[in-house]
Amino acid sequence: MTDVIAPPSVRALAREKGIDLDKLARDLGRTTIAREDLEGGKPAAGPAADTSYWEVDHAAYGPVTEEPMSRFAHIAAANLAAANALIPQVTHHDRADVSAIEALRTALKPEAQARGVKLTALAFQAKALARALREFPRFNASLSADGKTLIVKDYVHIGIAVDTAHGLMVPVVRDVDRKGLWQIAAEIADLAGRAQTRKVGPDEMGGASMTITNLGGIGGSAFTPIVNPPELAILGITRTEMVPVWDGAAFQPVPMAPLDLSYDHRVINGADAARFMTHFAGLIADPRRIMV
Picture (cartoon, rainbow, N blue to C red):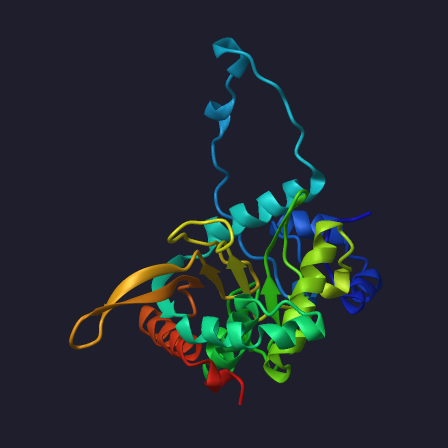
């Protein structure tokens, strides 16, 4: 079974055009193929890197074992390498006050148990991101493969990076801006659970407006996620930490979630990224604004 992710309509178009999706994915260095990849030009490749000095006899220095990389991992690695090499990426760091979200989650815990839904902070973050993408449409776009056309999307789909035993998978929650928190939380849990057993279908991958990669359950205070093309940005979130915040009279302990936005500098400039993150952090700090 192929590991290339493409919607049924894209696969049908590829058959009509006689395009080998596996080869195209290898050429583009990506796992996800969209319609514009079949219709647009191929981006110019950079000079081949000399990796001959990587060829080392490691066994000469001590005992080693060899573990083959899966085909899934091969494709993902090529995608990451191409994205890192071809996209001028910048990471903007910020943080958001999550005390209101945590209070709301605590208050809604009985209802969550009655519904059988775990209302995670990630559901709020996805909803807030969807609102921010509607407010800043340039972030809800993709750059064509030849870099000449910006494709602005009139939908908001959020990719959720899931750490699995077989590698990182990014299933997508569709139309997040039009769904309530309970539905978003349920869909995230369902997709993440099925990703662990590789039961997420090709039509449930790809087409995201932006991806969230959340390391909060593991740890860390900041990182620099790599943009997942053809998206223009990716939002990283790490573990909430208690931070002293000056209230005008004294320092108060406030739970703050570190935020890391990596973006494609060909389309997004630093000032716009700062405005986007300020708006997003404001939505997180006052979740009433995302529930209207």
